[in-house]
Length: 89
Image (cartoon, rainbow, N blue to C red; front, side):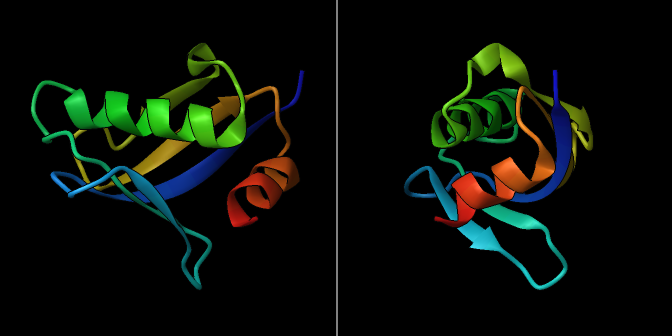
C-alpha cells in the first residue's frame, strides 16, 4: 500500500478549518478552529486532511511536530503525487 509524508504549517484557533495551499518550499498551510491544547489541533488537522484527501481518518496521523506549528503528516493509501494533486485542485 502506498504512503506519503507531507510537511504542514498549522494556524490553530482560526475562524474556520481550511486548506490554504502549498508554500514555495512545499509546505502545506492549514487553518483549524481547534486550540493547540491536549492534541485538539492535531486531531483537527488529521480530520481536515482526511476529508480533503478522501481517505479514512485512520489513514492520517501526525508523525513529527506534535507540539509545534510545523508538523509531518503520514498519509496511508496515497502516493505523494496523489496527495499533492488532491490538495492543489
